[in-house]
Length: 143
Image (cartoon, one colour):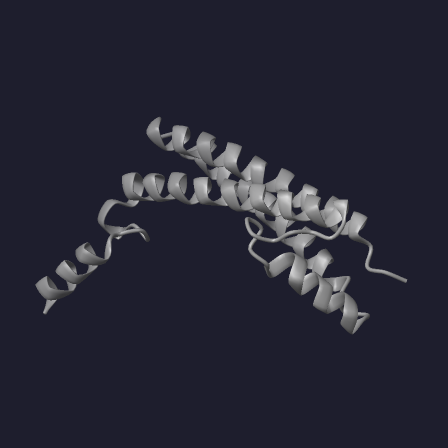
């Protein structure tokens, strides 16, 4: 019996759907912050957390598929940790897995940028994304 690549594809597609929803909610969250709408922002943060949980559940289900068989685990490691830009699948399913992973990666990169801008606008000097130079400057001023 082989690793069920179709199930891996389905779970990754669900994860991609959750990441797309996180992206949409993050944009709405930024708009809520701009309007100073704390009620909407709070709801959107919870909805976003729920989608993050959904994405994590999909990923966990994929990794659980490898717990029963060492060969499955090795195959999953290859499929899930290889650079999706460079990886070449042996089957149509593997190629689709790499394609979905690439879409997830691209969406996550865009999300990081949106999140960074939003954090810097809202938290200003307390932002998680402060530049290293700003952090060093603040440390030297405190000394």
